[in-house]
Amino acid sequence: MAKITKIDPKNWKKANIVQLDVDAENNSEAVDSLEKWAAENGFARTDEYFLRIVMRADGSRVFRGICYRITREVKDSARRQVKAAIKRAKRIGADLRASRQTG
Image 1 (tube, one colour):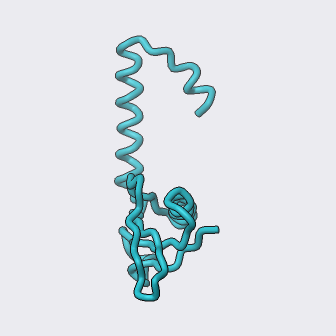
Image 2 (image 1 turned 180 degrees about the vertical axis):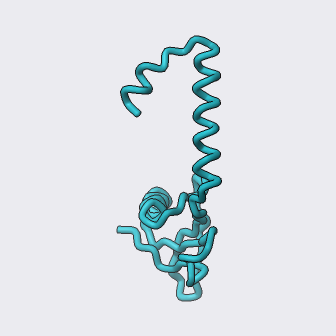
């Protein structure tokens, strides 16, 4: 099971961007761990598909990724992007009923 082994900076609760090291068997497990941590702590993971691999002095390997804080500006931007996408879809005649039922 993946485990977050380091969070930088140490006072990450005041930071907008954090770097995390994950002890995991593989990249997918590490990404899942970062996603979970980010969701639980008000952050989002960057769009990295393959995290950096860092070999520590003791020979252990960790995966390193970046997360950013979800700010009001980010939330507002996402809402505007969704509204614009819906407007474009309606303009081309897309049927949005199915997306309303699932979302």
